[in-house]
Length: 132
Image 1 (tube, rainbow, N blue to C red):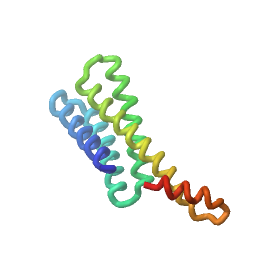
Image 2: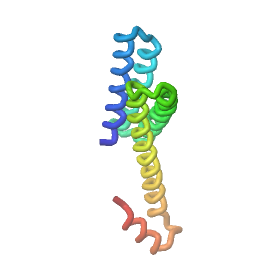
Image 3: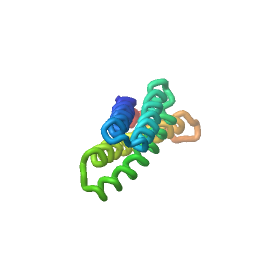
Image 4: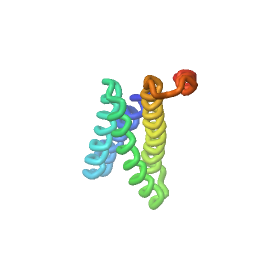
């Protein structure tokens, strides 16, 4: 599930760029779709291979940039296709990976503190209870 969001948004973005090129001859659509889509697919692969921090951060940055750019295009054009759809998918991806990155950092911090001898036993019990 973690990598599927970036994969789906990445493939949809790349396909959207290709469709924009085939229908309207838009080279910028093709270039942007393949660049952003490829970066999201790359983030998905990083997550699948165990580099979650890199994958989460990559997906967060790419989907944030894509949501910003396409969101502005949607506000100007008032047309849901394609700008509104891409902005919506990218905004969802951005929030999803923001939460994932935050939870990964919180879990890492809890694990780090759980195994130090400097902590009081009460803190150790609280951390153990909060672990997923």
